[in-house]
Length: 406
Image: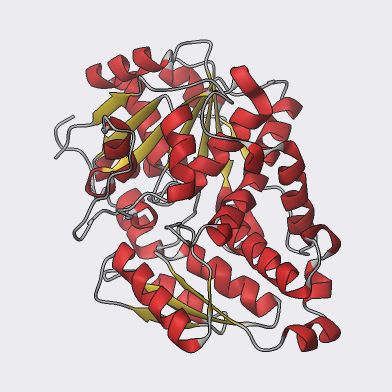
């Protein structure tokens, strides 16, 4: 299906009118950032200004946050997994996270006090790698489950951290259930970036971990002389990343928060369907959820991110795979003077949608609904690099997933 589905959210509220934002406050964000800065690998990822692309598309400014540079792991997900693990260990030690650093958590006395811990998770690749990497950093173990069809290179990257990694015969949501069962039966600690009834603290900490990239982005924009983004395009799987980024922007900017659209693949558009639901309750998507956007192939919205997305997102967009593929090629082969960005399938879909909004009749109608124009300052987050190098080459070099109808 090559059409794009767009839903303008009539239930959108102003910050503070509905879903609470205390979890995304400046105080919480500062606590998260301080913990991440305690890792030697920490450095702000680039915010790439693309004036050539902005001029080509007819927008005032286009900026892309390049998360392929995060901790050397080629994706942003480690921000959530590392902070959640830090919070878990802080609770076991009976200390606030503010008083702990990566080095102290990895020290001999603390390791002896904590004992042997195995972290368990399910992943499409990036989250599991982040959890496994953090576990190794802190002298712990990790066991990771992946859905069927997962790229073997992503599993290999996880195993390279010393973690056990198993590709299941089930979709993402069922793999989460398998991981949870394994953790329960083997005394492991589940570190999952989606929430369900009775399991919300750890997913909340993961969401808070993602705020580091939003804090960086606002600071970097202001360094460019831009006070805030007018528009924010966020991709969603279960919605934890999108909820965290939108929640922080709403808390930090108040009524000046950006007009935000949530973008998903057609086969896993649970947030889009949930926004359309008249009762305001989340809707699940089932089945194989086949898409090149492996990181977004999730069918059940996280219960703790859903309220933020329902109340503060301006629109939901469900799109075919060629949109992500176009975004990858656009970022890899930029306009003269612009910096290239290596962006994977899930990372580039928002850039692909932005290009569509400027160049197609349907896209221009979407842009008009969102108020996108020549004065707009648009922020996209490239959440991953070429985490599946072979697929990246097939798309960027050889034109895989092109839209033949344009």
